[in-house]
Length: 142
Image (cartoon, rainbow, N blue to C red; front, side, top):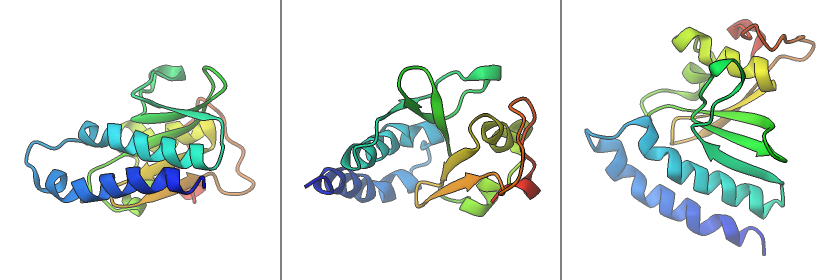
């Protein structure tokens, strides 16, 4: 049963979260390996042909936290990880770090955001015509 592939990584991830959340030494990269494992298991259980990579270098010099690659070096979806004290809405509509989420959306038209407690999908609004070199402004995101 494919769903069984997801159960153990999620259980392990969730079980270990409280200790990481409250540790004073925890940074975003602390969570990358486990988030990669959960995303990889989910994709595998759905037989989706993506590879999840950590801290890759994308066009324009961007370095997303994680990226889902489809067939080689094509980044289909970029992933932005923040610590649990931020909400998904704050992450999705943020213009921090030179409009990081907006730049990622300009490249792939969808971005997965996570605060480790939850995951969300940010997309360009219907009808928005993106330009890969121009960040997608918050008012053009959903």
